Each structure stands twice: as structure tokens, then as C-alpha cells.
Length: 625
Ligand code: ADP
Figure 1 (cartoon, rainbow, N blue to C red):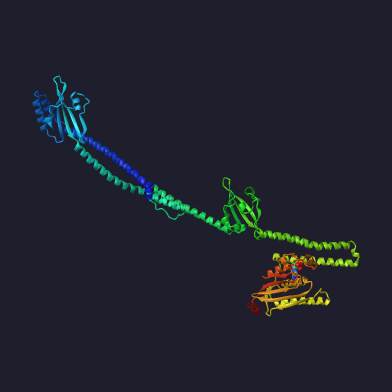
Figure 2 (figure 1 turned 180 degrees about the vertical axis):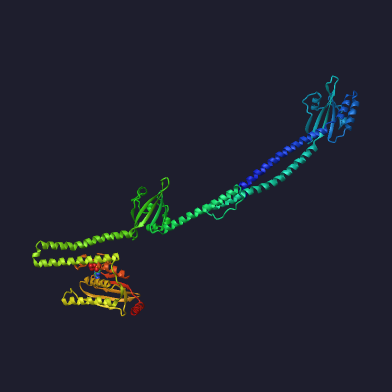
């Protein structure tokens, strides 16, 4: 059914239909005209055929004028009987009184009867309205009735109707003929119709086929397939159309490829960009969001689509869409969540149509967390440095003021004051040295002369020094409370690492000093050196104050001190561990601490061991060199 409906609606069917209808109409008109013409011609010929010849009418007229009616009648009957025309069915002769005087058929019965034929009576009465020929239906057969007045010329040269001859003839054969021809026409018409339908369909196909092909191609183009190229049908209008469609297809393919390539490039740039990019329409609904932006916000990119940019960025209450549209100054957004610090700088720009109408918003999010942290640290550092330097300076100044105000005259007091001033200036000088060292480390300008070092020897040398100091202190009676003891637990094997011996000695000195400094009651300081896998692990454990758990992660920060006043009293700068950490990391090592408050602390350093093979190879090379 659907196929039929489709066919009926097709151009092919409509062209064929118009063609066939036109042909049918032409054939029909021709047929009707021709059959009608034929009928007329046949009827004229038929009328000629049934017109009584003059010699018959002349003889009939004579018989009618015969005063002896009976003899006249016989004569008429004889004339009629002698007249042989196989088309004629009957001939009646009626005299001027309207009596039937003779009849070819049933002459005896009708003779002498008055005619009832009004047309004949009209002819007799010279009525011009009589019908010369009539076409009537009798017993379902068509008949032609011809009424011929029989006239004579009177003496005064007038004309007188003396009777009428009525000829009946069957039109059966005439109509049979016409019917035959009509059927011939119908059959020929039908054959022509069939042939024309086929021809029309064929012709229509030659027109619609290229259209169908072009239609299919345009459908494919619409579906995004530009590959197939039309077969060109000749150089007529359809051929030109096909060529144009081919060209169009090629152009669309080219431009689509360009657009796709551009889009891919843009998508890849957007995807791999470290900065977050958000695109929103005029209503502020997100239309594009890249991976980085989604990661910053902590949302699935698909879920963010069509949501308000203001809500997604958590700006409700701070900014409105109108603010973004009105003012494109960049601003900061804090996207920190769940223990993750994240501050981004948002740069806003508007997408405008040619007409100037705003069609969207582009927002670029740049992660400035690190920068912010660095800035904050720097600010903190500067404030710490100022604070740390101000304290000794204030103290120096107040003692110098006191001296100037007269304390200088009191020799003992003056000596005490000067000792304090000396201490404080030394501390300031140490601090400035530490700061310079840190600054060199930060800027990477510190000269590091790394070389292969036997860690056992280096560490042993450092500890020997400390043993000596402790011994001297004990001998001088300087040791507060219980005495200190250094216990060494070294691996039996030699451990080689690549460090700058001077700088690394500085690190070890610092850790050892701290162990002593923060063990006010003395105690054992256990130092170990061992190999764990490919690493040399150094540990320095004391039994001192220890570090509260909450401060453990801060001890390596600049200026951090658990107990500021104690550290200061002991001449600490709060920079020793920070410098140690920087240096160890410079040697690709790690430093960390474990501690229990009031029980003691253990500082660890891990350094990468240099393989024996390499050392041997190096030695060989050195020997050869
Ligand atoms: P400082 O000059 O104050 O010693 P450091 O950077 O060397 O500076 O140490 C930072 C802080 O770490 C110290 O002030 C101290 O509070 C703590 N600390 C370092 N070593 C130890 C230790 N062995 N025992 C306890 N606390 C320590």
C-alpha cells in the first residue's frame, strides 16, 4: 500500500499521468469527431440510397392521377413491387386526401386506410415544417423515414402536391458499420493507451532517474557522506544540475574537512590545556567545559553542561551574570575543597556577533595556588626576617642606650651589657649568614662541589669532633645536668655517597647541635649509619625535649621553632633545619623526623648509595689517568 501511495505521489507517475491523459483526451476527441463525421456521411449516403428514383415517382404520380382509383392502386402496387431496393423496408404512397394508396409491405390491408402520419399530412398540406427525413426507433431498431411530397406542375406553372411517398428504411447496417468503426477506434485507442502508458513511464523515468540519483546524493550529503559522485546524464538541465550537485558536494566536503580539522585542533588544545576553559551562552548556561576546568571545579564535564556558570563556580551571592557581562576585569575564585587548596584567577571575555550582540561568555581559569602560596610564604618570610632581626636589634639598642646613659661608667655592668650586645650581634650575623645561604640555595647560586664520599669516614670525623667538644665541656665542668654520651652504630661495610663534604658536614653539625641543644638534661645520643636497599640511612636520636606531634611537619619550615624563647636563648635562628633540608634535597636525598614529646627525637637522612662497581671503575680510571 505504501509503495502504491509513494508511486502515485511520485513525479514519474504524475508526468506519465499527464502524458496519458493528454493522449486519451486527444484520441477521444479525434474518435468522437471522426465517428460523428462518419455517421453524418453514412446517413447522407443512406438518404441518397433510399430516395425514390425519379422514374418511380413519375410513374407513381401518373397512377395517382388516374381517375380510376382501383386501377391506379394496382398500378402503384405494381410499381412498388417492381422497385427493388434491399435497404428499403417499406414504401407507402398516400394521395392528397391522406389515403394510403399503396404499400410495399402489407399493401392489401392498408390500402384505402387514412394515414395517421402527421408529418405526411403536413407535407400534403404544403406545411414547410414537415420533416423530410426522420430518425426514429422502432422495435429497438433505428429507422430512417423519408417523406417525399409528390408534386406536379399545374397549368399556371404552379406546383401542386398530389401525394406523398413515405420510405421506411432500417439504419441497422449503417449503425452496425459505425459501431464497428467505433470499436475499432476503442481497441486502437486502448492499444495506443497501453503503449503510451509504457512509453510515458519510460520517458518519465528518463527524466526522474537523474532526479532520483541527485535526490539520493543530496540525502547522503545531508547525512554527511560526500564521497560518492554523481554519474552525469548528458548536458541537459538535469545534467547541469547533477554537475552542480557534484561540485557542491565537493565544496561541502572540503569546507567540512576544514571545519572538522579546526574543531579537532581546538578540542585538542582545549583538552590538553592546563588552564580551565568554560564557555557559556547569553543566559549563562555552560556549553563547553574542558577537562582542566572540570577538574578545578571537581565536577563531571557532562554534568556541568547547561548549568549556570555562576552556580557551578560557586559565585552565587558574590557575582551575577550581569556583573560578568558588564565588567570583564579578572578576579580570583577560591575553589579549595576537601583539604585541597585551589585558587584560580578567572579571566572573562565576551563573544560578540557582528551586530554587536553578546552571544556568549568565555572564561579562562588559571591555577594560581602555587603562586599565591609562594607570595604568602614570601610575605611571611619578610615579616619573619624583620621580626627576627628587630628583636636582637632592639635589645642591642637598649643596651647601647643604657651604656650611653651612664652604665658605661659601671665597669662590671658595662662588661655585662657589652657581652649581651656581642651575643646579639653574633646572633644577627649568624642569622644573616643563614639567610644568605638560604637565598643562595633558593636562587641555585650556591656552589656545590659534589664528590664521592665515604660516609663512614665523614660521619665518624664529625662525631669525633663532638666527642672532643663534650669531653672538653665535661673537663671544664660546663656540662649542665647529666653528661652526654654519643653512641655510634655504624654498618660494617663502607658506604659511599655523592655529596659536597663541607655542606654535608654542615648538615650533620646542625643535627648534632640540635640533639645536644634540645636535650637539656643530657642523655645518650645514638647515631646510626646503615644501608637499606640502595640507600644510606643516617639517624641521630636524642633523649631530649622531643617535638609535639602537631609541630612535626613544620620543623623544617623557615623560622619555625617549637619554643621560640628557648631557641633564641640558645642562639638558634630557626633556619638550621630549613637549610639542612634544602641541602639534603640538593644531594637528591630525603630528611625527616620522628619524635615523641618529652622522650626524644630522631632525625633521619637518606642518601642514594653509589654502587661499588662504579667506584671501582672510577678508581681504575683514576689510576690509569
Ligand atoms: P633553631 O635555630 O631554633 O635550632 P632549627 O631549624 O635547627 O632552628 O630547628 C627548628 C626547631 O626545631 C627548633 O627551634 C626546635 O624547636 C626544633 N628542634 C630541632 N631539633 C630538635 C631536637 N633534636 N629536639 C627537639 N626539638 C628540636
